[in-house]
Length: 300
Image (cartoon, rainbow, N blue to C red; front, side, top):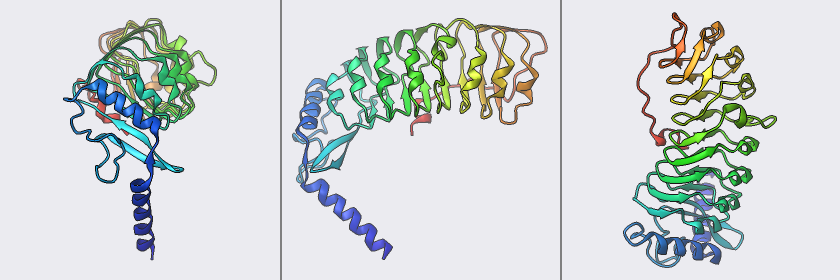
């Protein structure tokens, strides 16, 4: 009986997708994107309806769902196809989009403020492009955002502290950019980053120290600060992060001793410390290797 019910629901969903019309707003937006990207990139996008029209399948990388009487685009994944040019602003008209993946392309210029229009967005993957300018603070207006990947671009300026207001954000990766400022500025908002598990700030130009206030990010598991210009001593309060498993402090300007509490942490499996000015006798934790992080490792 349960199997029959499942088959019935799947068949009903298929009928809904087959006979529902795609919202004109989404058809217009995807066709604008198709025109801007060029034939080489979207050669598999056949027909005018990105969700399929019954005779033709949905466009490659486009996922649609039924919302009321219409089909709407909920996922767009066009990655590693050498898209060249500015971020396609028409994407921001896909107001029901939950997942946007444009990583491993050659997108240039700025990430437009209109990205803040995608209020349903939960996953944003823009790593490995050539985007520049400041990270738009409008990203902080996306209440459902859980994963934000901006790794390996050319972003500059400070990381918007407003991102700390994103209550559902679990993964923030802004590594390998040209960002400045301090960690203290990033976590200056009261009760910031309540759900954050992974924080990647590596390979930038961040200065200042590691603030004791980091201990308030109680869900933090991975803290990656390598290759910045951070200095000072490591506060013992950070060792009280209950879920911390990986701490990367290497290649900065830290000094002094590392508090004993880090070595007694029940879950801390690796701590990288090389390339600093710690006192003699300060030891790392775990078996060390060169970390080559692939963006796909945290795609969820």
